[in-house]
Amino acid sequence: MRLLKEMWQDIRQGANIDLYLTVGAAILCLLLQLVGVPIQQYLPAIMLALLTLVSINMLANRKQLEDLITTSKTTQSGILSHTFPPDFQHNLDKVDSLWIIGVSAARLIVEDYPQQIRRILRRNGCVNILIVDSNSPAYGIATTRDVLSNTDYQISRTKATISTVSVFKKENPGKVQLRTTKYPLDFETIIVSIEERQVIYMRHYGYKTELGTEPKITIDSRRDPEWFSYFRTHFQNLWESGSEFEDA
Image 1 (cartoon, rainbow, N blue to C red):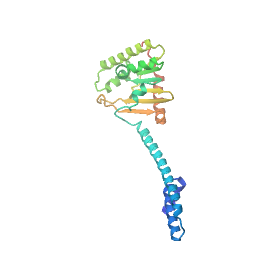
Image 2: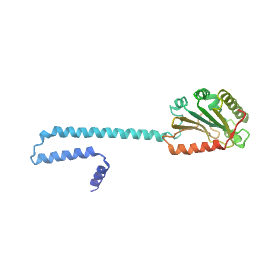
Image 3: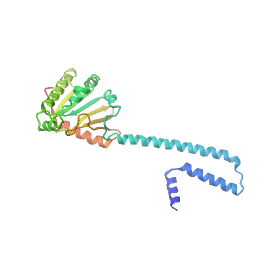
Image 4: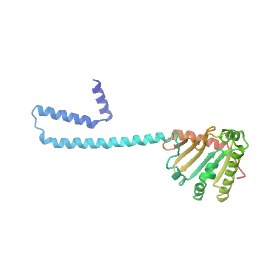
């Protein structure tokens, strides 16, 4: 009885139809043979129909498997990772707008991606930058958290960022904004906008951890809309509560 219920449930859901029809056709052919009904002339047509049904079901199963693989990749897109995904650099090269958030953001602005930022600005894109106010308590917290714990070193990096952003602003009037926050940031962040898609790339700030070992998180607005909305709101609130840096 339980087996029949499970079979009926499968049929109602459209699952394993090809198997049930194949088994049913085999049983029917066997019964007809037993009662002496000649079916040999119909066997080729029956076999062809069953093979067609099996092929269609295999294609449907393949599509479901591809969807599961895509879903699996999507689920993994927001988890901790050692590196950003392979399309990170590609996305930087075609963005419409760029947000950079960090304690000094010197690693992103001065060291790693100054040329990409210049290309974005030449394409008439816009760049918004948020760093921690070096005169606020939050800056002291960030300095203490760093494995080097060197205030002078951190201040030099902030000055390097401000100097580089100043050049960007002079070269591209109206396209670059720099703000400061009094909040001790948890992540160094890049937010890219590509047409109707946005992606958040985050690098976590650890406490006294080895440089270069920070976990990285990628959140795509199309794949992870719930978490993207959460973090996007978080960073938007930080931006709106920040102060415009006039001297850059």
